[in-house]
Length: 158
Image (spheres, rainbow, N blue to C red):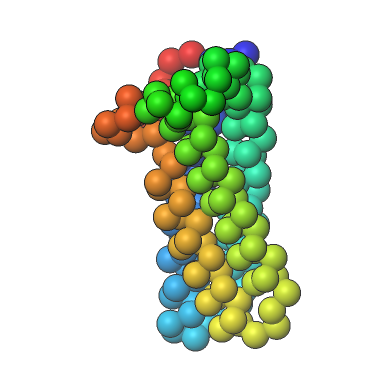
């Protein structure tokens, strides 16, 4: 179960990242070119929101139960976790930044949905989704991380 959930979480990371990059491009082009808010814009926002929430569910399953790097790492004490770079990344930094990213996506989605004016919808989406992207990029376990928490670009095997 751990391996399947981890693989899904890893794979969905790329779907979310691509959807977020597309949506940011879409929002900035709509904002700067003063385009009308279309059903495609709304669907782009919704897709990012759905992928974000799926990532949250999979991540919480890993963090709260399946992963040895999640909440279970605190059983040895907070002092040990905070002194160990890899444990600190997984048990604190990764989850905190990913939750922040999800909050930023949710704020952008919710505010843009309520706005009546197309320019405001694009602007809100562009700003909040860009902030979400920054938090997301900071929290991804890139292979080149010096913390020891780096993971492969793609998980190909089970």
